[in-house]
Image (cartoon, rainbow over all chains, first blue to last red; front, side, top):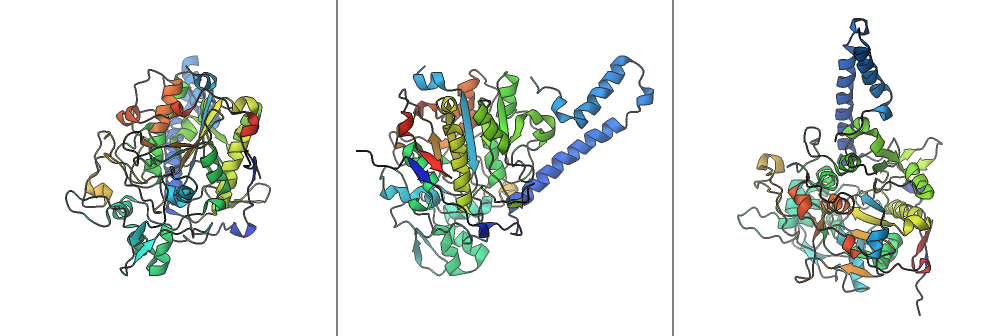
Length: 84
Length: 406
Protein backbone atom coordinates (compact mmCIF):
# COMPACT_ATOMS: atom_id res chain seq x y z
CA UNK A 1 0.00 0.00 0.00
CA UNK A 2 1.29 3.43 -0.98
CA UNK A 3 1.56 5.50 2.18
CA UNK A 4 3.63 8.40 0.93
CA UNK A 5 2.12 11.84 1.53
CA UNK A 6 0.66 13.36 -1.63
CA UNK A 7 0.74 16.87 -0.17
CA UNK A 8 4.09 18.08 1.08
CA UNK A 9 4.17 21.03 3.44
CA UNK A 10 6.90 23.55 2.69
CA UNK A 11 8.16 25.46 5.74
CA UNK A 12 8.07 29.23 5.69
CA UNK A 13 11.32 31.15 5.63
CA UNK A 14 11.84 33.06 8.88
CA UNK A 15 11.38 36.81 8.56
CA UNK A 16 14.75 37.25 10.25
CA UNK A 17 16.44 35.86 7.13
CA UNK A 18 15.62 39.07 5.27
CA UNK A 19 18.86 41.01 5.18
CA UNK A 20 19.14 43.53 2.35
CA UNK A 21 22.25 44.93 4.03
CA UNK A 22 24.13 41.66 3.53
CA UNK A 23 27.41 42.31 1.66
CA UNK A 24 26.86 41.56 -2.01
CA UNK A 25 28.47 38.52 -3.60
CA UNK A 26 30.80 38.70 -6.59
CA UNK A 27 27.86 37.42 -8.62
CA UNK A 28 25.76 40.51 -7.93
CA UNK A 29 28.70 42.81 -8.56
CA UNK A 30 29.27 41.09 -11.91
CA UNK A 31 25.60 41.42 -12.76
CA UNK A 32 25.83 45.17 -12.20
CA UNK A 33 28.84 45.40 -14.51
CA UNK A 34 26.98 43.47 -17.20
CA UNK A 35 23.98 45.75 -16.87
CA UNK A 36 26.23 48.79 -17.08
CA UNK A 37 27.86 47.44 -20.24
CA UNK A 38 24.49 46.85 -21.85
CA UNK A 39 23.36 50.34 -20.82
CA UNK A 40 26.52 51.90 -22.25
CA UNK A 41 25.81 50.17 -25.53
CA UNK A 42 22.29 51.54 -25.37
CA UNK A 43 23.53 55.06 -24.65
CA UNK A 44 25.84 54.80 -27.63
CA UNK A 45 22.89 53.98 -29.83
CA UNK A 46 20.92 56.91 -28.44
CA UNK A 47 23.86 59.25 -29.02
CA UNK A 48 24.12 58.09 -32.61
CA UNK A 49 20.45 58.87 -33.23
CA UNK A 50 20.68 62.24 -31.43
CA UNK A 51 23.50 63.16 -33.80
CA UNK A 52 21.04 63.04 -36.68
CA UNK A 53 19.42 66.42 -37.37
CA UNK A 54 15.73 66.04 -38.27
CA UNK A 55 15.97 69.36 -40.11
CA UNK A 56 18.25 67.76 -42.66
CA UNK A 57 15.90 64.89 -43.46
CA UNK A 58 13.92 65.42 -46.62
CA UNK A 59 12.20 62.32 -47.93
CA UNK A 60 9.53 60.11 -46.40
CA UNK A 61 12.06 57.30 -46.46
CA UNK A 62 14.60 59.32 -44.46
CA UNK A 63 12.06 60.55 -41.93
CA UNK A 64 10.54 57.09 -41.64
CA UNK A 65 13.93 55.58 -40.92
CA UNK A 66 14.50 58.26 -38.28
CA UNK A 67 11.12 57.64 -36.65
CA UNK A 68 11.84 53.92 -36.58
CA UNK A 69 15.15 54.42 -34.79
CA UNK A 70 13.70 56.76 -32.18
CA UNK A 71 10.61 54.64 -31.59
CA UNK A 72 12.72 51.54 -31.14
CA UNK A 73 14.62 53.34 -28.37
CA UNK A 74 11.60 54.92 -26.68
CA UNK A 75 9.44 51.84 -26.97
CA UNK A 76 11.68 48.75 -27.07
CA UNK A 77 8.79 46.36 -27.66
CA UNK A 78 8.55 47.88 -31.11
CA UNK A 79 12.13 46.86 -31.85
CA UNK A 80 12.88 45.13 -35.14
CA UNK A 81 12.22 41.39 -35.19
CA UNK A 82 15.15 39.12 -34.35
CA UNK A 83 17.77 38.28 -36.91
CA UNK A 84 16.92 35.46 -39.29
CA UNK B 1 7.06 9.25 -31.53
CA UNK B 2 5.90 8.04 -28.12
CA UNK B 3 2.90 9.36 -26.25
CA UNK B 4 4.96 11.61 -23.99
CA UNK B 5 6.84 13.35 -26.78
CA UNK B 6 3.67 13.57 -28.81
CA UNK B 7 2.05 15.50 -25.98
CA UNK B 8 5.07 17.58 -25.06
CA UNK B 9 4.57 21.25 -25.84
CA UNK B 10 6.64 23.07 -23.24
CA UNK B 11 10.13 22.82 -21.82
CA UNK B 12 10.84 24.80 -18.66
CA UNK B 13 14.26 25.18 -17.06
CA UNK B 14 14.71 26.60 -13.56
CA UNK B 15 18.38 27.28 -12.87
CA UNK B 16 19.33 27.81 -9.24
CA UNK B 17 22.66 28.99 -7.84
CA UNK B 18 25.81 27.52 -6.40
CA UNK B 19 25.15 24.25 -4.60
CA UNK B 20 26.77 20.88 -5.25
CA UNK B 21 24.98 17.56 -5.66
CA UNK B 22 26.34 16.05 -2.46
CA UNK B 23 25.52 19.20 -0.48
CA UNK B 24 21.84 19.16 -1.50
CA UNK B 25 21.00 15.58 -2.43
CA UNK B 26 23.92 13.50 -1.11
CA UNK B 27 21.92 12.38 1.94
CA UNK B 28 19.42 10.55 -0.28
CA UNK B 29 21.84 7.69 -0.80
CA UNK B 30 20.83 6.25 2.56
CA UNK B 31 17.24 6.05 1.30
CA UNK B 32 18.11 4.83 -2.17
CA UNK B 33 21.58 3.37 -2.81
CA UNK B 34 21.16 4.04 -6.53
CA UNK B 35 21.43 7.78 -5.87
CA UNK B 36 25.13 8.55 -5.98
CA UNK B 37 25.33 10.62 -2.83
CA UNK B 38 27.52 10.23 0.22
CA UNK B 39 27.99 7.17 2.42
CA UNK B 40 29.51 9.26 5.21
CA UNK B 41 33.19 8.40 5.02
CA UNK B 42 34.06 10.80 2.21
CA UNK B 43 36.68 13.13 3.60
CA UNK B 44 39.09 15.95 2.87
CA UNK B 45 42.21 16.93 4.80
CA UNK B 46 42.10 20.21 6.66
CA UNK B 47 45.03 22.56 6.99
CA UNK B 48 45.94 21.12 10.41
CA UNK B 49 46.39 17.65 8.94
CA UNK B 50 43.14 16.09 10.16
CA UNK B 51 40.79 14.21 7.85
CA UNK B 52 37.31 15.71 7.99
CA UNK B 53 34.35 13.66 6.87
CA UNK B 54 31.17 14.89 5.27
CA UNK B 55 28.42 15.52 7.78
CA UNK B 56 24.69 16.37 7.67
CA UNK B 57 25.29 19.67 9.38
CA UNK B 58 24.43 22.13 6.61
CA UNK B 59 22.54 25.18 7.80
CA UNK B 60 19.93 27.12 5.86
CA UNK B 61 21.85 30.36 6.24
CA UNK B 62 24.60 31.89 8.32
CA UNK B 63 27.08 29.06 7.80
CA UNK B 64 28.68 30.30 4.57
CA UNK B 65 28.88 34.05 5.14
CA UNK B 66 32.20 33.97 3.33
CA UNK B 67 31.08 32.94 -0.13
CA UNK B 68 33.07 29.77 -0.95
CA UNK B 69 35.47 30.23 -3.84
CA UNK B 70 34.15 28.98 -7.15
CA UNK B 71 36.36 30.86 -9.56
CA UNK B 72 38.69 28.86 -11.78
CA UNK B 73 41.80 28.74 -9.52
CA UNK B 74 39.70 27.89 -6.46
CA UNK B 75 37.87 25.07 -8.23
CA UNK B 76 41.19 23.82 -9.59
CA UNK B 77 42.46 23.57 -6.02
CA UNK B 78 39.27 21.80 -4.93
CA UNK B 79 39.55 19.20 -7.70
CA UNK B 80 43.30 18.59 -7.77
CA UNK B 81 44.23 19.37 -4.17
CA UNK B 82 46.78 21.95 -5.24
CA UNK B 83 48.80 19.73 -7.58
CA UNK B 84 50.09 21.47 -10.69
CA UNK B 85 52.34 18.67 -12.01
CA UNK B 86 51.96 17.29 -15.50
CA UNK B 87 49.58 14.36 -15.60
CA UNK B 88 47.99 15.30 -12.28
CA UNK B 89 45.01 13.28 -11.14
CA UNK B 90 41.74 14.68 -9.79
CA UNK B 91 41.45 13.83 -6.09
CA UNK B 92 38.52 16.01 -4.97
CA UNK B 93 40.39 16.69 -1.74
CA UNK B 94 41.13 20.41 -1.84
CA UNK B 95 37.77 21.77 -0.73
CA UNK B 96 38.73 22.52 2.86
CA UNK B 97 42.08 23.95 1.81
CA UNK B 98 40.26 26.22 -0.59
CA UNK B 99 37.74 27.44 1.98
CA UNK B 100 40.41 27.87 4.64
CA UNK B 101 42.19 30.31 2.33
CA UNK B 102 39.10 32.51 2.66
CA UNK B 103 38.04 32.09 6.27
CA UNK B 104 41.45 31.57 7.91
CA UNK B 105 39.88 29.42 10.59
CA UNK B 106 40.28 25.65 10.67
CA UNK B 107 36.94 24.88 12.29
CA UNK B 108 34.99 27.22 10.03
CA UNK B 109 36.66 25.72 6.95
CA UNK B 110 35.06 22.35 7.75
CA UNK B 111 31.63 23.76 6.81
CA UNK B 112 32.45 23.13 3.18
CA UNK B 113 31.98 19.38 3.83
CA UNK B 114 28.46 19.80 5.19
CA UNK B 115 25.35 18.49 3.49
CA UNK B 116 21.64 18.75 4.15
CA UNK B 117 19.69 15.90 5.70
CA UNK B 118 16.92 15.09 3.20
CA UNK B 119 14.16 16.14 5.62
CA UNK B 120 15.59 19.67 5.62
CA UNK B 121 14.87 20.06 1.91
CA UNK B 122 11.38 18.62 1.46
CA UNK B 123 10.88 20.18 -1.97
CA UNK B 124 14.12 19.25 -3.69
CA UNK B 125 14.37 15.77 -2.19
CA UNK B 126 10.69 15.00 -2.86
CA UNK B 127 11.05 16.01 -6.51
CA UNK B 128 14.25 13.94 -6.73
CA UNK B 129 12.54 10.83 -5.42
CA UNK B 130 9.18 11.35 -7.11
CA UNK B 131 10.54 12.06 -10.59
CA UNK B 132 14.02 11.68 -12.18
CA UNK B 133 17.29 12.61 -10.50
CA UNK B 134 20.52 12.76 -12.47
CA UNK B 135 23.60 11.16 -10.92
CA UNK B 136 25.77 12.70 -13.60
CA UNK B 137 24.81 16.30 -14.37
CA UNK B 138 27.91 18.50 -14.20
CA UNK B 139 28.52 22.20 -14.49
CA UNK B 140 30.01 22.87 -17.90
CA UNK B 141 33.35 24.24 -16.76
CA UNK B 142 35.19 24.29 -13.42
CA UNK B 143 34.45 27.95 -12.87
CA UNK B 144 31.89 30.53 -11.79
CA UNK B 145 28.31 31.43 -12.66
CA UNK B 146 28.31 33.53 -15.82
CA UNK B 147 30.48 31.28 -17.99
CA UNK B 148 28.56 28.22 -16.81
CA UNK B 149 25.19 29.80 -17.50
CA UNK B 150 26.47 30.74 -20.96
CA UNK B 151 26.50 27.04 -21.82
CA UNK B 152 22.78 26.89 -21.04
CA UNK B 153 22.12 29.74 -23.46
CA UNK B 154 24.71 29.28 -26.21
CA UNK B 155 26.20 25.82 -25.75
CA UNK B 156 29.57 27.46 -25.14
CA UNK B 157 31.20 30.22 -23.12
CA UNK B 158 33.26 31.32 -26.16
CA UNK B 159 36.47 30.39 -24.39
CA UNK B 160 35.78 32.32 -21.20
CA UNK B 161 36.26 30.89 -17.71
CA UNK B 162 35.36 34.01 -15.77
CA UNK B 163 32.54 36.40 -14.96
CA UNK B 164 33.54 38.79 -17.75
CA UNK B 165 31.17 40.03 -20.43
CA UNK B 166 31.82 37.98 -23.51
CA UNK B 167 28.67 37.50 -25.49
CA UNK B 168 28.32 40.88 -27.16
CA UNK B 169 30.54 40.27 -30.16
CA UNK B 170 30.05 36.62 -31.03
CA UNK B 171 28.03 35.33 -33.97
CA UNK B 172 26.43 32.29 -32.32
CA UNK B 173 22.82 33.01 -31.46
CA UNK B 174 21.35 32.13 -28.11
CA UNK B 175 18.82 29.32 -28.00
CA UNK B 176 16.10 31.95 -27.45
CA UNK B 177 17.00 33.87 -30.60
CA UNK B 178 17.22 30.64 -32.54
CA UNK B 179 13.76 29.67 -31.35
CA UNK B 180 12.27 33.02 -32.33
CA UNK B 181 14.02 32.98 -35.71
CA UNK B 182 12.43 29.58 -36.40
CA UNK B 183 8.97 30.89 -35.58
CA UNK B 184 8.88 29.24 -32.14
CA UNK B 185 8.30 30.87 -28.77
CA UNK B 186 10.80 31.31 -25.95
CA UNK B 187 11.15 33.54 -22.94
CA UNK B 188 13.49 34.27 -20.04
CA UNK B 189 11.48 35.03 -16.90
CA UNK B 190 13.49 37.05 -14.39
CA UNK B 191 12.02 37.59 -10.93
CA UNK B 192 11.47 41.36 -11.00
CA UNK B 193 13.29 44.50 -12.04
CA UNK B 194 15.26 44.74 -8.79
CA UNK B 195 16.53 41.20 -9.19
CA UNK B 196 16.76 41.61 -12.98
CA UNK B 197 18.37 39.01 -15.19
CA UNK B 198 21.67 37.22 -14.68
CA UNK B 199 21.59 36.04 -18.24
CA UNK B 200 22.16 37.79 -21.55
CA UNK B 201 21.63 41.40 -20.56
CA UNK B 202 22.30 42.87 -23.99
CA UNK B 203 19.09 41.21 -25.12
CA UNK B 204 17.07 43.27 -22.64
CA UNK B 205 17.12 46.14 -25.08
CA UNK B 206 17.64 44.32 -28.35
CA UNK B 207 15.20 41.48 -27.80
CA UNK B 208 12.83 42.68 -25.07
CA UNK B 209 10.12 40.31 -26.25
CA UNK B 210 12.29 37.49 -24.91
CA UNK B 211 11.87 38.62 -21.32
CA UNK B 212 9.13 38.43 -18.74
CA UNK B 213 8.89 38.64 -14.97
CA UNK B 214 8.04 35.89 -12.52
CA UNK B 215 4.49 37.18 -11.96
CA UNK B 216 4.04 36.91 -15.72
CA UNK B 217 5.33 33.34 -15.60
CA UNK B 218 2.70 32.49 -13.02
CA UNK B 219 0.01 34.19 -15.08
CA UNK B 220 1.18 32.45 -18.26
CA UNK B 221 1.05 29.08 -16.51
CA UNK B 222 -2.46 29.78 -15.30
CA UNK B 223 -3.77 30.98 -18.66
CA UNK B 224 -1.96 28.40 -20.75
CA UNK B 225 0.15 31.05 -22.47
CA UNK B 226 3.54 29.61 -21.58
CA UNK B 227 6.01 29.68 -24.49
CA UNK B 228 7.46 26.49 -25.89
CA UNK B 229 10.72 27.14 -24.03
CA UNK B 230 10.94 29.03 -20.74
CA UNK B 231 14.02 29.76 -18.66
CA UNK B 232 13.13 30.85 -15.12
CA UNK B 233 15.40 32.88 -12.86
CA UNK B 234 15.04 33.02 -9.07
CA UNK B 235 15.35 36.22 -7.07
CA UNK B 236 19.01 37.12 -6.63
CA UNK B 237 18.85 39.65 -3.81
CA UNK B 238 16.93 40.57 -0.68
CA UNK B 239 14.91 43.69 -1.40
CA UNK B 240 11.71 45.53 -0.67
CA UNK B 241 8.85 45.09 -3.13
CA UNK B 242 6.69 47.87 -4.55
CA UNK B 243 4.16 47.20 -1.79
CA UNK B 244 6.82 47.63 0.89
CA UNK B 245 6.96 43.93 1.70
CA UNK B 246 10.18 41.99 2.15
CA UNK B 247 11.25 39.91 -0.85
CA UNK B 248 13.94 37.37 -0.03
CA UNK B 249 16.54 36.05 -2.43
CA UNK B 250 15.43 32.63 -3.61
CA UNK B 251 18.47 31.61 -5.67
CA UNK B 252 20.11 29.63 -2.79
CA UNK B 253 23.43 31.31 -3.52
CA UNK B 254 25.39 31.23 -0.24
CA UNK B 255 24.56 32.76 2.16
CA UNK B 256 20.93 33.27 1.08
CA UNK B 257 18.40 31.25 3.05
CA UNK B 258 18.00 27.89 1.32
CA UNK B 259 14.40 27.61 2.54
CA UNK B 260 13.32 30.51 0.35
CA UNK B 261 14.75 28.67 -2.65
CA UNK B 262 12.77 25.62 -1.64
CA UNK B 263 9.62 27.71 -1.65
CA UNK B 264 10.50 29.15 -5.05
CA UNK B 265 11.05 25.72 -6.59
CA UNK B 266 7.73 24.58 -5.11
CA UNK B 267 5.99 27.67 -6.51
CA UNK B 268 7.29 26.97 -10.02
CA UNK B 269 6.28 23.32 -9.71
CA UNK B 270 2.79 24.14 -8.42
CA UNK B 271 2.22 26.71 -11.17
CA UNK B 272 2.70 23.99 -13.76
CA UNK B 273 1.12 21.22 -11.73
CA UNK B 274 -2.17 23.00 -11.08
CA UNK B 275 -2.99 23.58 -14.78
CA UNK B 276 -3.91 20.07 -16.00
CA UNK B 277 -3.28 20.78 -19.67
CA UNK B 278 0.07 22.37 -18.92
CA UNK B 279 1.08 19.64 -16.49
CA UNK B 280 0.50 16.91 -19.04
CA UNK B 281 2.43 18.72 -21.77
CA UNK B 282 5.44 20.10 -19.90
CA UNK B 283 8.86 18.89 -18.79
CA UNK B 284 10.46 20.94 -16.00
CA UNK B 285 14.19 20.73 -15.35
CA UNK B 286 15.45 22.02 -12.00
CA UNK B 287 19.22 22.42 -12.16
CA UNK B 288 22.01 24.40 -10.46
CA UNK B 289 24.52 26.44 -12.42
CA UNK B 290 27.62 25.35 -10.51
CA UNK B 291 28.69 23.87 -7.20
CA UNK B 292 29.52 27.13 -5.45
CA UNK B 293 32.72 25.78 -3.87
CA UNK B 294 30.85 23.11 -1.90
CA UNK B 295 32.10 19.55 -1.65
CA UNK B 296 31.16 16.83 -4.12
CA UNK B 297 32.87 13.46 -4.30
CA UNK B 298 32.53 12.66 -8.03
CA UNK B 299 35.47 13.46 -10.28
CA UNK B 300 34.32 15.63 -13.20
CA UNK B 301 34.63 13.62 -16.42
CA UNK B 302 36.17 14.51 -19.76
CA UNK B 303 34.04 16.13 -22.45
CA UNK B 304 34.20 17.11 -26.08
CA UNK B 305 36.37 20.24 -26.43
CA UNK B 306 34.65 23.15 -28.11
CA UNK B 307 37.74 24.44 -29.87
CA UNK B 308 38.67 27.17 -27.40
CA UNK B 309 41.66 27.31 -25.08
CA UNK B 310 41.83 29.56 -22.03
CA UNK B 311 45.46 30.47 -21.45
CA UNK B 312 47.06 30.54 -17.98
CA UNK B 313 46.60 34.32 -17.97
CA UNK B 314 42.86 33.69 -18.12
CA UNK B 315 42.65 30.68 -15.81
CA UNK B 316 44.96 32.33 -13.27
CA UNK B 317 46.66 28.98 -12.79
CA UNK B 318 49.86 27.54 -14.32
CA UNK B 319 47.66 25.46 -16.61
CA UNK B 320 45.81 26.35 -19.79
CA UNK B 321 42.30 24.96 -20.05
CA UNK B 322 41.08 23.35 -23.28
CA UNK B 323 37.44 22.94 -22.24
CA UNK B 324 37.99 19.21 -22.38
CA UNK B 325 36.67 18.36 -18.91
CA UNK B 326 33.58 19.39 -17.03
CA UNK B 327 33.07 21.28 -13.80
CA UNK B 328 31.84 19.88 -10.51
CA UNK B 329 28.57 17.96 -10.27
CA UNK B 330 25.34 19.78 -9.48
CA UNK B 331 21.78 18.75 -8.57
CA UNK B 332 19.49 18.19 -11.54
CA UNK B 333 15.95 16.85 -11.50
CA UNK B 334 13.55 16.31 -14.39
CA UNK B 335 9.86 16.63 -13.54
CA UNK B 336 6.94 15.45 -15.63
CA UNK B 337 3.94 13.16 -15.16
CA UNK B 338 5.47 11.11 -17.97
CA UNK B 339 8.43 10.14 -15.78
CA UNK B 340 8.36 6.96 -13.75
CA UNK B 341 8.46 7.63 -10.03
CA UNK B 342 11.87 7.11 -8.49
CA UNK B 343 13.85 7.29 -11.72
CA UNK B 344 17.59 7.55 -11.11
CA UNK B 345 19.61 8.42 -14.20
CA UNK B 346 22.98 6.72 -13.76
CA UNK B 347 26.15 8.75 -14.07
CA UNK B 348 29.86 7.98 -14.19
CA UNK B 349 29.53 5.49 -11.32
CA UNK B 350 27.96 3.12 -13.85
CA UNK B 351 30.58 2.41 -16.55
CA UNK B 352 28.04 0.59 -18.73
CA UNK B 353 24.81 2.59 -18.53
CA UNK B 354 26.08 5.83 -17.06
CA UNK B 355 25.34 9.09 -18.85
CA UNK B 356 26.96 12.49 -18.51
CA UNK B 357 24.94 15.68 -18.81
CA UNK B 358 26.07 19.29 -18.65
CA UNK B 359 24.48 22.67 -19.30
CA UNK B 360 24.96 22.39 -23.08
CA UNK B 361 22.42 19.57 -22.72
CA UNK B 362 19.80 22.30 -22.21
CA UNK B 363 19.98 24.03 -25.62
CA UNK B 364 20.71 20.60 -27.07
CA UNK B 365 17.43 19.28 -25.71
CA UNK B 366 15.47 22.37 -26.76
CA UNK B 367 16.91 22.02 -30.25
CA UNK B 368 16.12 18.32 -30.47
CA UNK B 369 12.55 19.04 -29.38
CA UNK B 370 11.72 22.15 -31.38
CA UNK B 371 14.47 22.89 -33.92
CA UNK B 372 15.31 19.61 -35.57
CA UNK B 373 17.94 20.10 -38.25
CA UNK B 374 19.37 23.29 -36.79
CA UNK B 375 23.12 22.77 -37.01
CA UNK B 376 24.12 26.41 -36.45
CA UNK B 377 25.26 25.53 -32.98
CA UNK B 378 28.38 24.60 -31.14
CA UNK B 379 30.07 21.23 -31.29
CA UNK B 380 29.68 21.02 -27.53
CA UNK B 381 25.91 21.36 -27.80
CA UNK B 382 25.75 18.87 -30.64
CA UNK B 383 27.66 16.29 -28.58
CA UNK B 384 25.77 16.92 -25.33
CA UNK B 385 23.35 14.30 -24.02
CA UNK B 386 19.70 15.29 -24.27
CA UNK B 387 17.13 14.23 -21.70
CA UNK B 388 13.70 13.83 -23.22
CA UNK B 389 14.22 10.09 -23.69
CA UNK B 390 13.59 9.88 -19.93
CA UNK B 391 9.91 10.51 -20.61
CA UNK B 392 7.97 7.26 -20.82
CA UNK B 393 4.76 6.42 -22.66
CA UNK B 394 2.92 6.08 -19.36
CA UNK B 395 1.10 9.14 -18.03
CA UNK B 396 0.97 8.93 -14.25
CA UNK B 397 -2.52 9.44 -12.77
CA UNK B 398 -3.15 12.86 -11.31
CA UNK B 399 -3.44 11.36 -7.85
CA UNK B 400 0.04 9.87 -8.17
CA UNK B 401 1.76 13.26 -8.45
CA UNK B 402 2.45 15.27 -5.34
CA UNK B 403 1.50 18.87 -4.58
CA UNK B 404 3.29 21.33 -2.33
CA UNK B 405 1.46 23.28 0.35
CA UNK B 406 3.06 26.70 0.60
